[in-house]
Length: 188
Image (cartoon, rainbow, N blue to C red; front, top):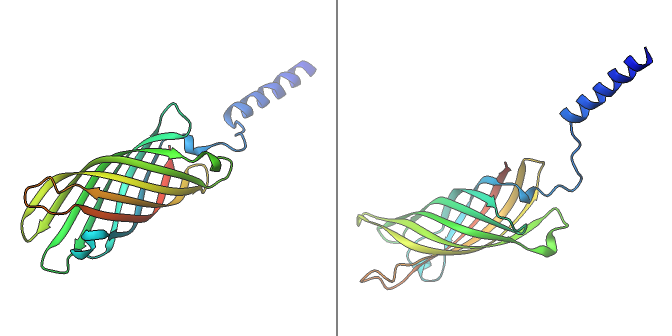
């Protein structure tokens, strides 16, 4: 009878520890793949500010881990619409890849700061001139985030986008835009 009680208790403990494993304190959720979205002001700067006004924009992103703990690769896409001070309006659909580097001095704190750099293409559409084309773009950025549970992170991002248009005959300037937004990530 004692051995039967011992076996039952052993099986109950085995089943509960298998079904409900303890999580380690201080699990680094930055090391999980992430999918998310952002929303916030998009501000033209430098010579672009002379032509179009600030507006709101938003986008989606996906990030995946690489073998190095402080690095991730990501893909971002967004939609941006600008009204101009003249007749034209400008729509952008930037799609780019980036490399994210988490600053090591902040790895022990819940706030994660990371630097971003990347490149890709942007679909540019100008109305009513009916100009639409794909232009190369480069980006630099910084992002801060903190975990709001195991699955969710909340953050703030600032990205600088440089849209290369000077390679087009007749074009005299590039596009310069700052994206600032609140981000919401889901750890997969």
